[in-house]
Length: 440
Ligand SMILES: Nc1nc2c(ncn2[C@@H]2O[C@H](COP(=O)(O)OP(=O)(O)OP(=O)(O)O)[C@@H](O)[C@H]2O)c(=O)[nH]1
Ligand SMILES: [Mg+2]
Image 1 (cartoon, rainbow, N blue to C red):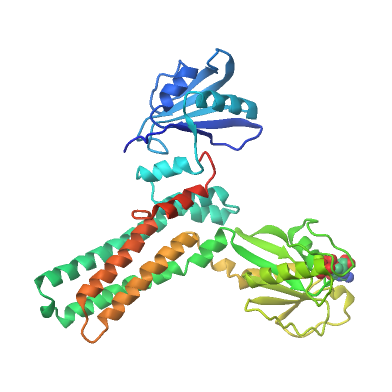
Image 2: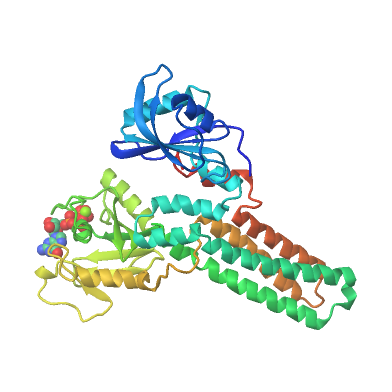
């Protein structure tokens, strides 16, 4: 493990007033630079030292706790110093200004984690988990991301990749001996091993939807004709006065989004413009937005206030049929697929929530098993699976060509390695870190 060439600095805590703020300096010059401002710091590894910090002209900035982490025992694996000062933006600003004046540069987004990755402390999946963990909005998403950071997904993938490497070794050995003499028994063994691997990868791929759901990528859109009570329902679900409610049809034009925590799962509820034929230009724009939103939704709440509503929807999305304003209706329908509510007074909204959780299969989610959580992971694993499927197909051909099977297995392994970040193209790797905050 080695220090990178550059020394860089960034605040690790958000800009604002707080009890403490932390500034991180990373790289070969980190200790020397901090010592120029705080000569009392001697460089004891991982020892928190209380020290006054002065500007280069000798003015006191703050009394801080300074901790030096000697390479490789730091977050990044490089030499690193963490300065905990009082949580005032002006103290952080002066501190940064002073450190930058010694030729240290500002950190790029995610650069601390990138150094940890380049130093082999974590793989790319774990790096992504750090970004997701910071952004986690609910307990279950935090749990799944910390499990990934702890290596749950990486270990599973490594184990499967070792199995694949071992099979590839057996095939290459068989090829070395002579392709003509490969027995049917050996081919059967290869078929069975690849099928098992493919099954395991298929299972992992299917966890992506849940992983996405846990990281807040699930949209539930409220739709229906104007004035049926869509905005009232959004406000009732969230307990907030988020959207404007009025008896004038066409009130909502823009998308109004609220994130709710349903049993530890973050769900985005979106209120939309009422859909109907109109010549009003602004309303039409709102309806266009609503339609786009419906199409990308995971679930739609289709609201009507008409007991005779036919509930026909033109898009291929799952939906729950809702008749609102039951307080105004004399009777209700005996159709179990329709739920009758009063968005205004909250009647049956609890039953609706249960239906939503059931439709999204929220109660079946386990956070203790590995999950794919990013599109990059899904794409890399899909590629890996495509080549495994091709290898299986080649093996099932009339006279299997083991050279081709080996090639397909190797290509599939490459995708697996890029998933873990061993062979990931620079541009893909850089996007992973660019999505992170500065200071992480
Ligand atoms: N009696 C009764 N009135 C309701 C109920 N839900 C909503 N309303 C009323 O219906 C009217 C329209 O409500 P909104 O929530 O603005 O309806 P909307 O579907 O968002 O309307 P647009 O944004 O114009 O499409 C308001 O006057 C609400 O107070 C309900 O359960 N019972
Ligand atoms: Mg509305």
